[in-house]
Length: 503
Ligand SMILES: *Cc1c(COP(=O)(O)O)cnc(C)c1O
Image (cartoon, rainbow, N blue to C red; front, side, top):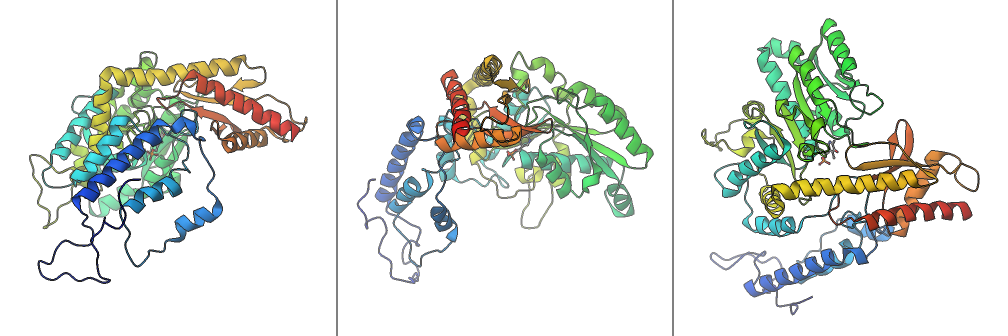
């Protein structure tokens, strides 16, 4: 750490009150101090990310430290800027979830792209509020949204907004679907609204992400009006069942308005039959939303592309650049084929905000008003670092790693593969029988093995419920991961089993 202490802040008497024109406020720092601290932070960032493999993948937070962090007691006096980096280095960085490390396989959490890390800092300095007025970063957001839509294979008309993540994107798209449906039925107001809204019914599969249920709840759908469609043995939505459920609901006087399909289910990586679901939606007057938070860009990968036929006919799609693209966390996207439908749902006027009708403000397309420009710049920077072919290569890299892991599991004498993806998530179970000193049930064994692997710090994986059974699950979404890291994971699983047996 860099700067001489005590010089970083002009001395300030307790409870200083500014005289008129009496100088800068309490957040101002000397330009040299600011530059030195920024340089020190940049040095630290390069070291932290550069040496990530030399540290444990994850480390439990001591409970006293947890309590300290969560205590929430602000000292009366402010501190020097240099204390910030010291604090991060000592109190935060040693306790990651692990998602920067190439042997981290739990959940769909990727490390930040180098371009994204730099862009985040730059965008923070610019500090655009990408909700209202004019700002170059707001125009850049329109551009990167179109780039994402094009990568996903959506229609050229597609627009939308960047969001905090996939959950928020699902919420916006369900909100837009609801408003669209009410408009189609001339039911945006009064008794017609009450009658219609009370009968709205949506559909998702038993593999859908829980954020879909949250979104449905937030737009006012009771849980029993979000129907769960069963899946076939490959975890894809059973389209005949969907069709039958929609018809039965309609016959009962309900109003089916939206189907949410999975473009990459979270637990097992399945892609729903997009075209067949769209046919049901078109014949029944429903909105088809694709939840591609994780797998929304699969159309770019030749081996996945056939499953993504029909993406251009979706009404909306969620994509999470902070998952597969390694854009720093806090970047999702709601892509809507007819963006005016987002505006119909979310453009509200106020006298203190007078929007531009030719270039509608981004806040007209979402529920956020003051919005960060970091999303647009980090996504743009990451896409520029990759280029179109780099995006494909990155996604292919994850497919290749998953294929390698599946092969290793299949060759292993005491491991069994549970799913086939096709997205890069590998669910597997241990075939070691109970008894022999191991936990009594397979579920307990898998839970204990995951906990042991996590505690040792050489690799990290989690469990998931697959066909009603708790199994081990490894996601491939770190651009630094190599086949050697995959080997490490399996060695760690094996040594966890050995440890449990002898413990
Ligand atoms: C991760 C995920 C989400 C939620 O996205 P967040 O960015 O975590 O809010 C939604 N749907 C699917 C399929 C996901 O995998």
